Length: 160
View 1 (cartoon, rainbow, N blue to C red):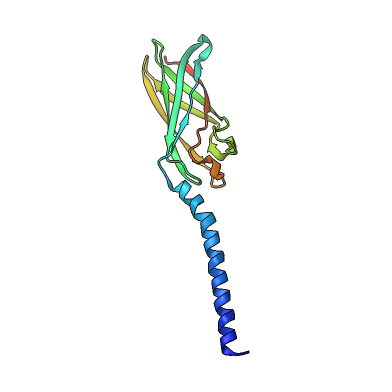
View 2: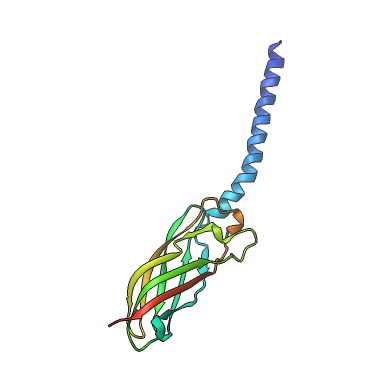
């Protein structure tokens, strides 16, 4: 084989490799950049809990920003007591509902579903509880900018 045909085959192989690399980059880079925006807001809706058998309500709510696949953040759960007496929140239950984005299931979010706590909330006051939340590394790209409603339930007793 002549040196010019060997050079032509080598050059062709290199060009084919570069074209393949550029195609992969064209497919992968936009996907990676879509998740690189770390300041997306994921708002978690809230519901309420009950205090013992008295039926007195308290409110639970939260939001977290900056989630992307594999990122773990601390979500601050806010507890509000509208009652005239202090309460101790003993339990929080969190259920992740489907997101507002098609193809982004509730299973994309990892959060403890049941927490035993002991948080004192003053009469007509507020308190906070930190809860880790993570967008799983396997979350599909359709989860970019998604909002997952979280259904909170809780149990509390009147503080003595």
